[in-house]
Amino acid sequence: MATETSPVFLVHAAADPVVLVINGRASYLNCAPVAQFFDKLLKQGRRKFILDFSRCTGMDSTFLGIIAGAAIEARRHQPPGSLALMGLSPRNLELVKNLGLHRLVTVDGDASPALSAEQAKVLTTPDHEELANARLILKAHENLCVVDPNNRGKFEDVLAFLKAQVDKDASGGK
Image (tube, rainbow, N blue to C red; front, side, top):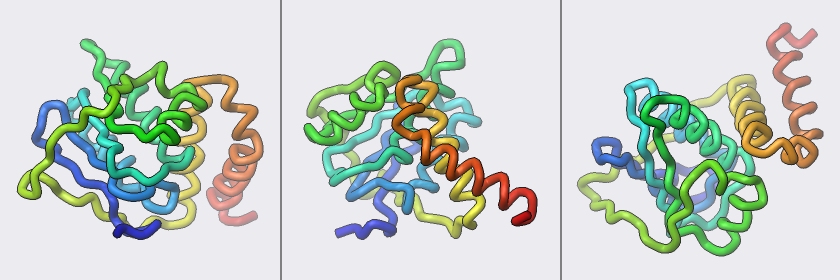
């Protein structure tokens, strides 16, 4: 079983749409490779993604903010791209709806795409310095505020803390 910080993401980037399988818990501790994966593929012109949550044991707001950012970016293009979330447990679906993400992505019941061992590639967690990690978490939460302005109140303290940390680190700790 995957641990909190072990790689838990399997991808089939050659598929159309691209398939991402979340295996275990997706959190701020291990989601940097997903953010990098989305950035890379969106820059390559890929716009359609399926995320399979059937093996996801939980997720946090940082991970959902990364999904929000990818969906926002994918929809900016013509024709607009899309993200479909499949196989969400009732709790994970509640998290998606609570943050308003269901208005930005497609939520597709229980159906999940098949992903063979030959197709699957594991996204590995790179060494992530503290400042880069703070920026990633800050951006993820800012994305959630774009999705639903009501999220700003939910994450006000997190945003203030992370902005202060990023500003302090960017100025050399002064």
